[in-house]
Image (cartoon, rainbow, N blue to C red):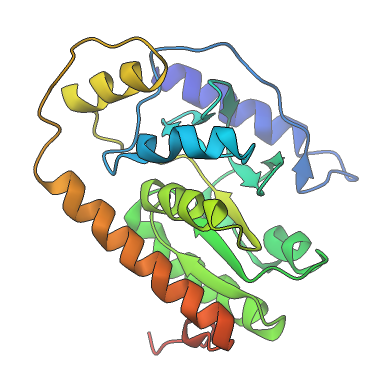
Amino acid sequence: MLRLRHLLCQLRMFSSNYSNREVLTDYHYTPFDDNDQGPRTSLSRLNDQMLECQQIGIGSISKYGFRLYDGQFLYGPIAIFPKAVLSWRVLTPDDITPESVHFFAMLEPKLDVLVVGPGDRQHVDPVRRRIAPFLSEHKIGLEIMHSEEAAMLFNMLNIEYRCVAAALYPPDDLLVTTNDQVRLMNMYGKPLAERMDMGSDIDDKLRLAKKRCANICRKVKRREWINCKLRDF
């Protein structure tokens, strides 16, 4: 699996050597595979509602990429919108710079918020320091967190029909549990068990995420984006 990850990174690096390369490109779908795992924060509860509304949603996440609710897998970093998704050409979290998110500032209508998931938790603060001034200059709200939480937040804002986009990088450190595997199978119509304890912290995490989503929506309405300002690091 590590060799596959290394190969994909090499392919992205090879393709990025062209002088006329773009940050965002088309992506390729792949069939369902058992290697990708659903986030522990239980994204599957929004599955039916998002499919019914024909909204794009992230159903699971792995070290190699992201799987949509319709079962199609996208390799590598992605830029995801309410009804479209593109390949996001960043080789590492260190490549997440103002240039790599400049496209989001060119969109019309203007985004209310850009959700950024730079992979693992340790990349959050360095990436925030690099891109927060740029997004603040363009009056775009920024929500940045590790990619598992970022995927769930995007889904929740999307189902509320907010003008939102997300830039997500696959995490390198992803702990997979038995409950994750069961939830993934149930999500795609392959139940392994009718009932199973998913952990007492799942509901708490979902409630906290919904509360954060509600706060974001209120800020969007009032245009009070505190998180666009630079913090003292």
